Image (tube, rainbow, N blue to C red; front, side, top):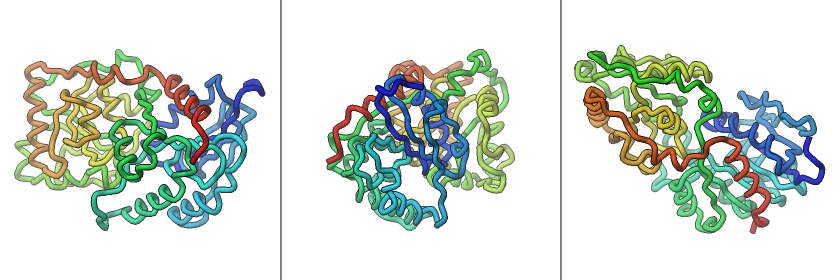
Length: 368
């Protein structure tokens, strides 16, 4: 238990149930609780998902589960507006679930989704209305936030372009790979001889529309002979298989940390299809392991991966096939990527990240 003279804060994460955000907080939360600079007096948890069972390391921290009785969009709107009084107190509140609350307490918002950035044009796609409402909530409450934390320069620029009043309130904090990978035995990962076999590729991503799994449905049976692939493992349920005509496509469902390590141990490279990311954890994971990366030729990927990745047009199956073929050719010539420049910018551990988050939480000025 920390001294009573240490500043106290509350943490709000009632909306964190998605795979990527959950994985991040499973690494960040223990570091926040172990930070000597603060005492976490309250933590507001989701009622579902793995974080609903999170047990604070400090016995003096009070945990609350936020139950939802309405459809999620309606529930979130009410939570962030007329019901926000439930979270109002004199201590600063660190909100880890993307949308600001309508509170008068000093509020620091951790933004982990790129869907809050205003799109170039509105299209009726899956979840389009949900994201539009989220942007309305964000705009309604943004002046209640003292500081915003994002993970990349692309996210910072996108937020400021969409909401110019944020110009001096957005902070970038980079992250290391997840804790489970930092703690893994590096001897488990080694170069696999390629010889005459096809590539073994891995795409760890939940089945969200922007993850672009549906690009794979464009693979034609007649073209399979031209794909130098032995296996492509997707972490989605077999019922969501986007290309049942492709025999080397393996849908294995969500993997735990031990299964993720085993998957990475067996592959030749990471295939990343996503069209929209605030960061892209698997890209960091692959760089940390020294794996080749094939990813979309988009700003978020270019910023993170630089010139070492192999890029493709995220709307073109022919471009993807060409990128995979290029990787096979490079590996046969004993090429390996050099991620040293990219990894130089990454914190060594999550304690560094937690310390930066707490400094911003304690030292930011009151909201405007």
